[in-house]
Each structure stands twice: as C-alpha cells, then as structure tokens.
Image 1: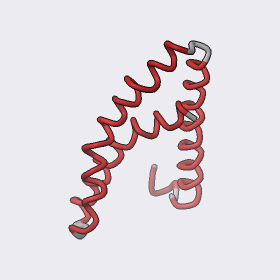
Image 2: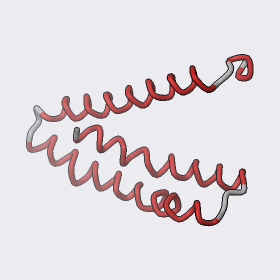
Image 3: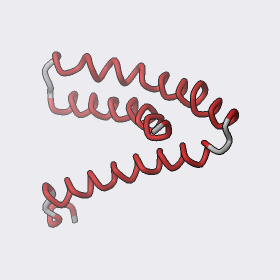
Image 4: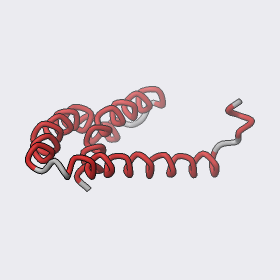
Length: 98
C-alpha cells in the first residue's frame, strides 16, 4: 500500500496540470479550477516528501520492504492501465483513433 500511495502522489500533480489545460481548452467555468490548481501545485511537493520521508527511510530501515513497495506501485500502475483499457473499449470507436 505504501508504494501504491506513493505512486498516487507522484502522478497527481501532472494529472491535475493536464486537467487544467483541458479546462482552458474547453472554457470550463472558474468554479471548476480551484481543486485542480491546488493539487497541481501541492501534490508534486507531497510526492517528493513521500519519496524522501516515507519510501526511502522505510527502504533503508527495512530493506525487505523495498521490493514490496515497488510491487505496490506496480500494482497501482497495472490497475490504472486496466481501468483505461476498459474505458477505451467502452467509449472509443477504434475507427476514430486510427
């Protein structure tokens, strides 16, 4: 779980910046922005802190946890991929993508 949460923190900032670009492109209302602005700025700091203050110290103090934290991050990444593959299958006409 530690690795999965770490990956979540590391991905949140870039993901929120992409949402903000989409909002600009689509002319989203101003009320849609605050949550994503905050997370675009704060989550990269959280991600670095997570690595520096949680992952690295735990891996140093308990080396046997290192591979399990990596597995947790891998698990989270696989869940993301499966989720988006399912969305693509349901929502994207492959003729439009080609």
